[in-house]
Length: 315
Image (cartoon, rainbow, N blue to C red; front, side, top):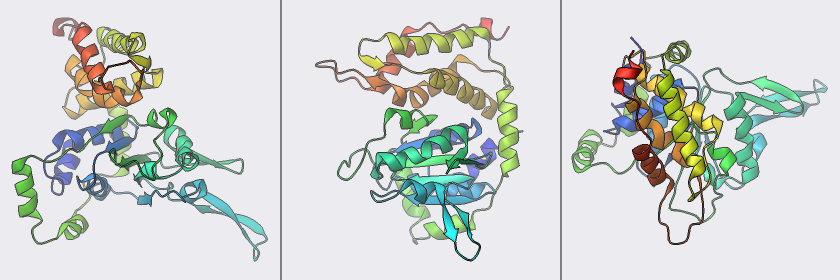
């Protein structure tokens, strides 16, 4: 029995509703990727990151991104110590298990690029020396989509490093009422501090290995390929999904099947994950008069590409 459901239930003590967002965040972590949470302020992005870190035994760091932040403020740097007569490396906040990159689009592109190697290769290279990060290194980045003053949009190379892009969204009426009841005494911080961890870092690594053993039928591999190929042939898309994106969809589908206690992937796993995994990787063309966004393009592709029949994939 995997611990994904147990971690999800623990986070639900703080985050009201948003079951899919919590689940997909956990799927991203077990799949070995990173998550970009894009939403307006006050929807619980930071709370989700803190609740996740409190649910798992491991180190947690937070970086508040600002325009004056330097790459060395993230990765660390070598500092000369006169007493020792040598340079000593001071670790940056990326040397942790879970990293919250808060308002990542407020930093300059140079600083944003400081995370590229960390996120893709789980390592940091400084002054020619490479240092490994945690095997369970996981980044949750947040950004506000409606505020443009003093921000620097993430370049495509940076966006492609995120295995999923998710949105918390506003709560429903019933969920809003539950939030007011649960935190009417202003005890959000207290409830966070009272959370107990329900999983260890070794549990995450174990689940990652077990999830990668989930079976994927050849017809489903071909289905993923058809979806990816369709993104590259669209007239309204300037650049489609890269092989990194197709692998991300495959890995996340495996973990979602694993989270649902299955040892095989079904088409619904792929269809459920296609938008959060693929949409942010599309570079949309400047088609005159078109109001389509990347998510609607992925949804159209899903409607057009034939879905493998269940009878075939279970044989």
